[in-house]
Every structure is written in C-alpha cells, then in structure tokens.
Length: 264
Image (cartoon, rainbow, N blue to C red; front, side):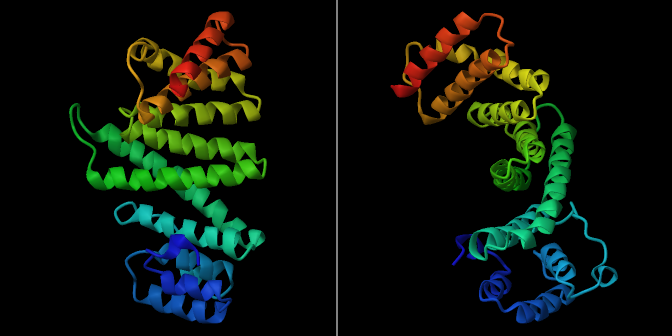
C-alpha cells in the first residue's frame, strides 16, 4: 500500500485505483465533488476529466483557490501522481497530472512570495503559511527529481527554483534550508548550460555563508550546521567548475577546509 495515502481524506478513492476499480473510483469521485468535499476536489475533477468520465464543461474551471486549502489540494494531486508512477507503473497516465501540478506549484510559490512581502518589517509568517510552504517545498523537490530522472532539465530548473523561492520567502533565516536549495538551482542551471545564472546562486551562497568558516574554526558543527557548510562547499566548487571563481586556488583550499569540518 502506498504510504502517502494513509492520511489522505481521499484514501478510499486511491484504494480503488490501486485495485484497478476505476469505474467505482469514478462514481465515488463524482459523489465527492457533488458533495463539495473540503480537500481533493481539484484532483478528483482533473482525474474525471482526463479519464473522460466527465466533460471539461461539466468539470468547470480547474484553478487553485488560494483562499482555501490550496497546499492540501496540491498534495492530493501529488499522491495521485505517485500512485501512477510508483504503484501502478503507468507513466503515461501520470503525465497530464504532472503538467498540472507543475503549473500549480509555480503559482503557489508566487502566492507565498506575495504573502511574505506583504508582511511588515518585524512581522511573523503565519503558521498555516509556513506549513503550506513546507508541504509545497517537498512536492517541488519530488517533481524536480522526476524531471531530473527523465533528463528534462528545463523543468527541473523550474521546480528547483520554485522550491528555492518558497524557502527564501518564508524560511530565509534557516541557512541549512536556504543553502542547499540555492545550490540545487545552480546545479540545475549548469545542466541547461546557463553558467551566468548559476553564478548568481553560487555567488550568493559564498557571500552569505563565508563567515561559517570562522565560526566553526573553533567549535564543532551540528548536523544542521553541516548542511550549511556543505552548501558553502558546493557553492565554491560550482564557481570553480563554471570558471567564475576569482581565486580558484584559494577556493579549492576552502573546499578542503569545509570537507574536514563536515567529517568531524
């Protein structure tokens, strides 16, 4: 059984799919959307439309409603995709839903960025925005990995950028989250032969994270610190790799220094 569906409000629907009971799943989906269930309606409508169980006119507008539980809607769609890819091994059936979730994740990252910018100086991110962002970051990484495995690097860049945008919008004081996400975008940009933009991400990490070398020269880094240091190491390595390091020999020494810190 797919572990992702255990906490889903649409577990009954997903179980029917896993047992190849698509006709029963369609009837259940129609019942759920007619009752205007709280979470998963968008996923169910997409599934009904793509399976020709309902016409596009009958399904209606298929857009996220940011005034409701939009992150949970995306999570339900992600669960559907994972069932097709991991359990049913129906990669072609998953493709239209993957295109949808890519669009929804991109729009959601922009929404979260706007929310963060709207908060006045000294304000706090609301708990639900934080939780939404955490969930969306996970699904963006899921999609980035999907695209990477298929060598669709342009879409990998997009999903890694979405993840990074969410992190920088509401989690920018957590270096161990920001650094790896920035490096992830830089690496993906290298794959599409865009070293100029990759430089922007690597350089930003080296500028902001450089003080870590002095900070941990005399104390042992904790696990979260090691993630931040790893990101700094990878940023220096990236600059060297793309030929944008101002002092390659010095940066190589920094890489060796960080590797020693991480091993401790």
